[in-house]
Amino acid sequence: MEVEVVSGKSTILGHLTKDVSLNGLFLTSEEKFPVGTDCHLTLFLGGRKSRQRIKLKAKVVRAEEGGMAFTFHEIMGSDSFAHLRTLILYNSPEARCVEKEFKAHLGIKRHP
Image 1 (tube, one colour):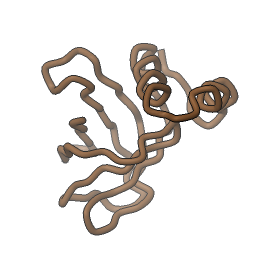
Image 2 (image 1 turned 90 degrees about the vertical axis):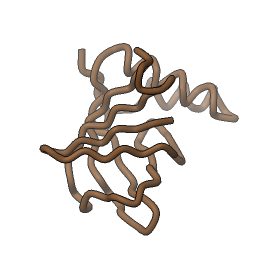
Image 3 (image 1 turned 135 degrees about the horizontal axis):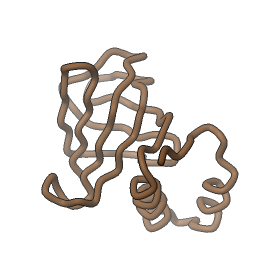
C-alpha cells in the first residue's frame, strides 16, 4: 500500500510496506529520515484517492539500506483505529491472539 511520511516540511512517499503490526511497520524507500525523527504517517488502503486511510503519529526507529522502520505512538481517529485493526486481523494467521493484543495494548492510544 502507499504510505506518506511527513516530518516538518519534508515528505517521503513509499509503496511497499513490510511487517505491519500494532506496534509499527517497515517501509521500503530510498529516501529516509534519521532515526529518532517524529513523523505523521498516512497509509492509503485503496490508493491516494480512497477515503480509507490510516493516520498515525510515529517515530523512525531504524534506517537501513532499502528503507526505514517506524514505531507507532498514536492512532489518529476512530476510523484509523478500525482500519488498522482490520488490516492486521485479516492478514494474521492468528487472529485470536491479535484481538487479545489489541484489547490489552497500553503503548498506543486512540485519538478521537
